[in-house]
Length: 210
Image: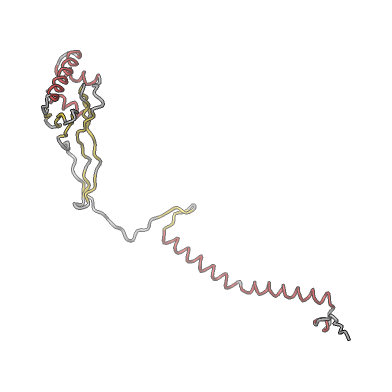
């Protein structure tokens, strides 16, 4: 009869056993096998959870159809099967479920489950060769245009050269500013002292006491 239960478990990914727990099918993500240059397909294995043990109505409908009995008879039969399973486990008997795993009572008195291993699938590993591209140019969005790292580097060098060039070409502007300041100072001096040669010297009188 476990064949019927196994079929339901594989189709619905879970099977609850009253008073014991629920067996789930757990998916393991695909993994990369660098050594053999391939990607392993997703894997599946059985996992047991003792904190949920209530079968749903769909399960009993499925069981009644498989055994060709009424729903209430399927409920009665399954509860009796689960009770017998728990009784055998309490007596320290190991219960083997072919293709799924095994149940046993651990030293603390709790029921533990040992999975039968990976669930066979028809998926095959896919070849995976790592390709290193040394001459590719990754683009990035700068403002409203796409540019590469090389273009940004070249534009940075051009901007630096233009900055140096502008600094070299603008030296005469600073000379004109300095000259204008000097001429303004001279004009202000002659305006106050008068436009003569003597105004260039110090006109302050120094009296010598006898």
